[in-house]
Length: 196
Image (tube, rainbow, N blue to C red; front, top):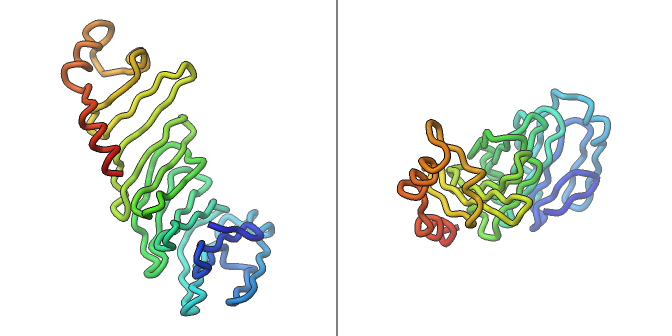
């Protein structure tokens, strides 16, 4: 997405998003008095379709970070309170609300059907669109160890990553045995990564 005065525009130039107050839009130029809106926590976001001049407005208080998908079908909002919301740019309907730890970054895959988030816990989470289904989580550690896990608990990892894993009621060798026999599944992880 492209941004000017902190007001993002979709890569095809069709959509412009920003706070409702103090913003003037046209098909050739736009301005935004965004800084004065940052302090007002009750603003609504406005999405303007420069092609049809249709304007959509939805509640998103504060100063969320806004990102368009490459195909301009979705707008992701990262509110200051955490999580992320994904909106349909044509209908204005909310497709997904991702309630995870504080999200610092969001990136859409080129196909527009996958969303990657980076959070305060250091994990990268992958979601399917438009459903918002959590597909998998990638976690890397300082010593080149890593874990990729599915929502059902299945995982693949580097050889030393087991020391970072926890399972209620298990520890030590019993934990390693339980993880290896019931949850370790490189084939499922490979299939999930291939499907993205």
